[in-house]
Image 1 (cartoon, rainbow, N blue to C red):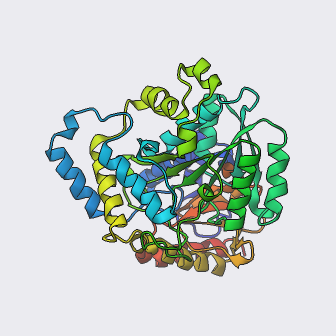
Image 2 (image 1 turned 90 degrees about the vertical axis):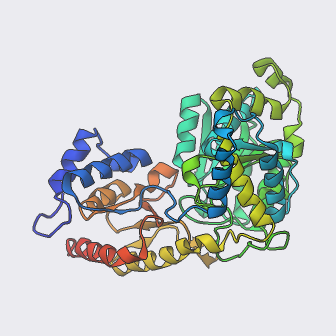
Image 3 (image 1 turned 180 degrees about the horizontal axis):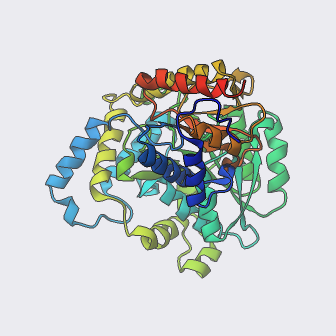
Length: 440
């Protein structure tokens, strides 16, 4: 219970009544969108603006190259025309160039497909990969990870398994992964890199391990690159020259990549992602897919059956926007890293504030080095579960999401830096100070 002798920013009774109104008994299991609606209601009732760290939404201006290209496309009349399912040619060719320029991998334009955000890409992939092998009906998550992907599997009624990777980094990863793959029921492995929510980044030897095991056990790797190039310890901004974005695609042909436009291009609102399927997988023939979907070719099933049934094509004008940004990046006219480094600066300064007032960084190490500063970080406080900590912080006008919802074994919160501008750091510090005082 909240100690009412100490000052809070939000009346604890308002927090309590809002949770009751939303039928929320444990914030530790609340989804991201549920927390969003809770905070929205509290802000509306109190007029107090929160330090909002619950939702991973970009706050930087969209890349003007994309905006101008989309405006030009709209002026040319694309709004009145359906886009082709597989995507407009310029989008596909520039996406193929982009992965070559910044990942040093070859994916034919045919395998570069626009989706209505990366979430639609994962949804279609989950439906497809789970039907390839009758005996392989389970998807394995290397967690912590993006909670909504598991909701997708619940909706699709697809089985999944998961493990928290924190204690299985480096050489330990092989045995842990193989303990699942050896069962013979895993059709796909899913992870994000950089990782949401912990911001750990797999090393090359770990990606090689994942790729080699995918080859050995004939398993598909779904690599979520929502935060492409945002491990700011390594600058990948020069096209066609190392260092490149780390990827499992250098070690296996059994891959599908989800590349988001939301963070690296600050183009979240147009819901346009890129699904890149390896040349081998795109053209692979599976008799089970023919029985289930009427087509045996994996790429044709993804595009002509699954994506078609979900949306009949992705945003026409936004494809021209992303194509233009891909082209500018590949031509060296747009620095994809420079534009988003602000997030790393915010993370460093915000972590310092939380630690100053008694919090700990839950996922603090990336094997043998301190965790990088990026879009997310994780926090905990002694004596609190994630749900309890979040409820208490709501009384101080601070929001986040509980780590339990991400597949983490640890108690704490995921904090996103994007909506806390540096001008609000003094407000954050004052609220953290009040929080700390209430416990002593």
